[in-house]
Image (cartoon, rainbow, N blue to C red):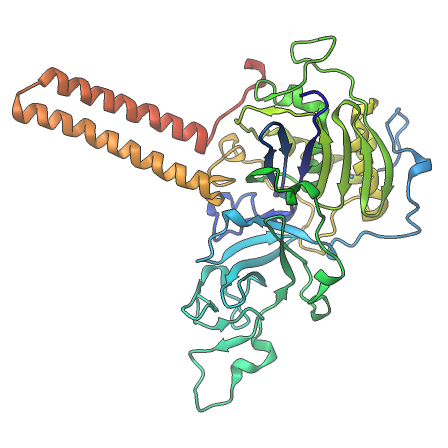
Length: 468
């Protein structure tokens, strides 16, 4: 496999579910700065394995790795506009065309729904103009319109109100008034992901003709097979981006889960070694970097980290660490402007993290522009079982996992019924008692094992570094 290039792309999005679809996470999931989402996609050809993963600062006196100044693009006072970008919302394969989907992106409550009249996904503001009820709680009616759950107002794909049940047919056509319309956000499907532009001003209606979402060539290459996945993670955008730009942590944080290339000289059990990273070009749209043994990297602000690297074999058991929430809390305590004073980053393996923080400071004022939707206070850290939950953060939003989850649960019930039925048959017939009891015991044991398997794989599986 030496010499094989592996595209690795991280597409985190500032996305979270709303309280209507995920009540379990009201304590932290809906705070806009405290919930990020990313997608992971394995790309494979028939002969090669390839990995693709989709969806803060005054200088200190300690030595740090910084982008090479001679290659840096002069900003000339440019400022990154967080609301003039395309944001990924959801993988198309995990969306149900029969129902509207609630999401929160950049602090905006939106509803994603399939307009069968125009054969496309639409993104609206998640509030009916009548009494601000969430349209995501409604339904798609027999004419393919989005219907509000509260009073039945109906809207077409352009956001126009087409029907108000309470309006008299002999009265004025109040449904045609401008105030009866819903906010419509530009949206498109790109790389089998629904993207949206977080500004509903009519001047951006055709923004797709002027600016398109980031393009990853391999995703349009038919020789690749895409295996997709998506998970909501309860910590901030900055921490998630740093984590995804830091290949040196993999051998430690994911020890025994993700297989890495063995070093020439193994200094410790995990096999950590120097990683030569460098940022070659930094500008308002992101930066380019070299990864030495890992290949090359490209950060396309704000949501894509794209790299070519040697193949890494994922054993299939993903993990979310609770370390991210604690890191975020410590950084918030010292202040975003003091990140580089608080963190000691003396090696070249930290180059991308330093480059990202430098980009964030230079072009975005050191933090995401939430436009008043976030106060800056972090919610309490939830229990570990909620923090590392798999069901609400992934399974409910993934078609394949939710289908498997339902099948396993059905099988568990079948085994339990079979166990009871075997005992009943043995008691009633008095024949083959030992055999029927043995069957009952096996079915019961099987159901217990399956229940543990379901919980471990679909709900919660702890990972203690000290014990691995």
